[in-house]
Amino acid sequence: MNECIPSLLEFINHTNKLNSSFRNNDKITNYSLIKFGTEFSKIHGPLSLAVCIFGIPANLVNIIVLTRRELAQTATNHLLLWLAVADLLLMILYAPCLYHFYIIHPHPMKNPIYTPSKLWIIYQEIVVSCALMLHSLALWLAVLLALFRYIHVGFPMSGSIYTTRKRAFISASLTTLFCIIVSIPNILVNHSESCLGPILNYKSNNDKLFNKNIQIYYYITSEPDFNEIHSLQYINITIKQLNGWRTKQLHNFNVWLQAVITKIAPSFLLTILTILLIIELQKSIKRRKLLFLHRDKSLSIIQSTSIPPLYNDESKKLNRETRTTALLLTIVLCFLVIELPQGILVTCIHLIDKFEENVYQHLGDLLDFLTLLNESISFIIYTTMSYQFRQTFVNIFCPLLIHKSIIYHEQPTNTIQYRQQYRISPIKH
Image 1 (tube, rainbow, N blue to C red):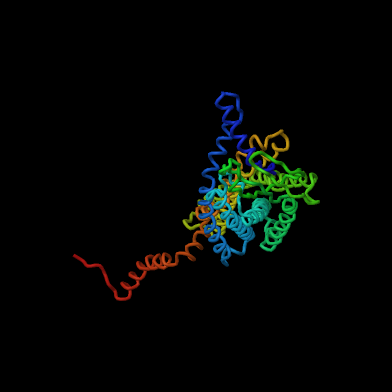
Image 2 (image 1 turned 45 degrees about the vertical axis):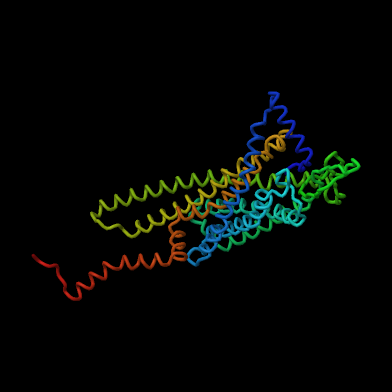
C-alpha cells in the first residue's frame, strides 16, 4: 500500500530540494521518473475522465447485449457480463473523484490528494475501498474466464460438464464474496486526516502579525504510526487519536494481503493460464487443418463437389471454438499486459528498500490510467472479434439498418418472382 501522504510543507521542501540539487548538477537518480510523474499527473485527470466517459456507456452496452437470450446461455458470456458490471461500477464511482481532485484542483498547491470538503473526502474514502474490491473482482473474473475456457477446450469430452452457466454464476458469486472479505482490512486501515493549509500573514496598524485565510484540508492515509501532534512553521497537522484496530500489525497484514491477493496471485495465475490457452489454441488450429485435409481426401475419393455435412458441421464448430478462444485470449492478454508489471512492482516494494517512494508512487497515475483503459476497451474487442455479439448489437441498437438490409437483399428475389408470375422475358432486338 501507499505510504502516508506527505504534509504540504514536506511537499514544498521536497520540491525545493529537488530543484536546488538539479541546479547544482547533483546526481539525482530518479529525477526523470519524478518529472514524468509530475507531468503525467497534470493530464491524468482529463485523460482518465475521457476514458470513463467512453467506458461507462460502452460497458452499459456490453451488459445490454450480453443479457440477450441468444448470448446469455453460455458460461463464458455470463462471466463477461459480471466483468462488464464490475468495470461499469468502478468507472461510475471513480469519475467524480477524477473531476474533483484532478480537474477542479481544490487545493492551492494543486496537489490532488487534499480537499477542503469533508464530504468529498468521505466519498473518496468509500471510492478507494470500493475501487479496490471492484478492480480485484475484475482481475479474478479474468482468471475465471481463462480457467473456464481452458477446461472447455482442453478437455473436450468432459469440459462442457464443468463449464455450465450455473457453475459460472456460482463461481462469480463466490469470487465477489471473496473480494469483499479481502477488502475489509483495507477499509479498517484507511482513514481521513486533516491539516491546516498555508497561513497568510498580514500586518495591522500597530505592526502586529495576524493570520487569515486559514483553511482546513482533508486527505486519506493508511499509515498507523501517527500518535502525536506535529507543529510546523506554516502548517499545523492535527492527528486524531488512532483507534484500536489501526495497529502496525493490521497495517502490515493489509499491505501483504492486498499485494498477494489483488496483484501477485492473479497475475501469476493469468500468466500460467495464458500459456495454456495459447497451447490449446495452437492445437485447435492444427485440428482444423487436419480436418480440412481429411475432407479434401474424402472429396477426392467420392468424386463429389458437395461438402459432406459431417465435415461441414465439424468445421464450423472448430472455427467457432477457435474464434471464441482467440477472443478470450485477447481479453486475458490485455489484463496480463496491464496487471503483470503492477504485480512485479508491488513485489519490489516489499523486497527493495524505499522502492515505493522512489519509484512506485511516481507511476501511480499512469497505472490508474492504464487500468481504466483496460476496463473500457472490452466493447471494441467484442465488436471486432465476435460476429454474434456484433450482430446482436446491430439488432438492438440499429434496427433501421437491419430493415434496409432485408429490403435490399429481398428485392432481387421479388423481381425474379414477379417475372416468373407474369412471364416477363427480356426484349429481343
